Length: 323
Ligand SMILES: NC(=O)CC[C@H](N)C(=O)O
Image 1 (cartoon, helix red, strand yellow):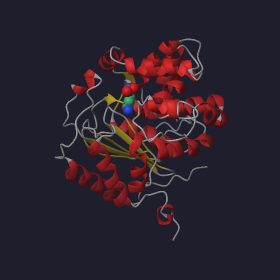
Image 2 (tube, rainbow, N blue to C red):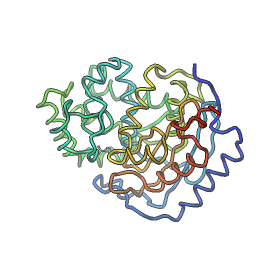
Image 3 (cartoon, rainbow, N blue to C red):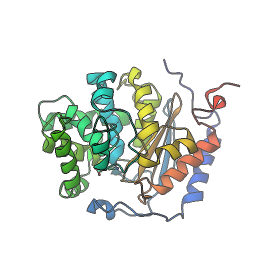
């Protein structure tokens, strides 16, 4: 049973810290939006939003929190949750692995080097393999179950951003090559083309920062969505999911991220990042300009600032209530 304590007891202070983070980084224009997916290069780069959702369903926000952006790689966490529920934790370790690659998210070199080939479920190879493992007799059935599960985690109906999907589907030769290479190594569990198509759809789901924070808060609350009260995933798998997020969720920057924040997080090239504070809530931020690893620069800075101000590093005994 997860104790439903808020992120901080003083909600005015929390809102103030979020506003400070927004103001501090509002004019930071470092980095550039992803351009290997043509539609992502067309997103308004100045958009910037921050939302916190607590496990008891309170919402705190600043900036462009109504804007729908593509979830991209953050989807990998939630498809992993589905497959872990279907196949169990041991199968995830054996078939997908839990080792950070130390290489870019779409690395082919990593496939050649890693014992499980796919490395972990949060890089492209591992995520496409994860999607290929998902139950469902057709692509349509798998996609429907993914959209329903993500929506249950957000507590609201989510939709595909069709322009993003079409743009990525027309340009994802690298992911198709990755899927075929995995197939050659015997670690692709569905037709590679179909698996990549379902994966591309899941990456193109549109979300707001509030919905993303709600998805994170569902992980923080033992699998119970803070708005609907629906138990959407098995609480027993959440420590394993968060552990993989901590070691692999920010690609080849995961070690530094963990050092700075002590929070499991996941980023996507759409510009979103969500960080989970177990038992308390989640912080989501969105800004399209990315660093060279593919992580949103302002989203990183905003979440790191908020986490440091709130003292919610999971490795700090005081942050978990030990005096
Ligand atoms: N890092 C990401 O967000 C990558 C997701 C993107 N859909 C891709 O496959 O390249």
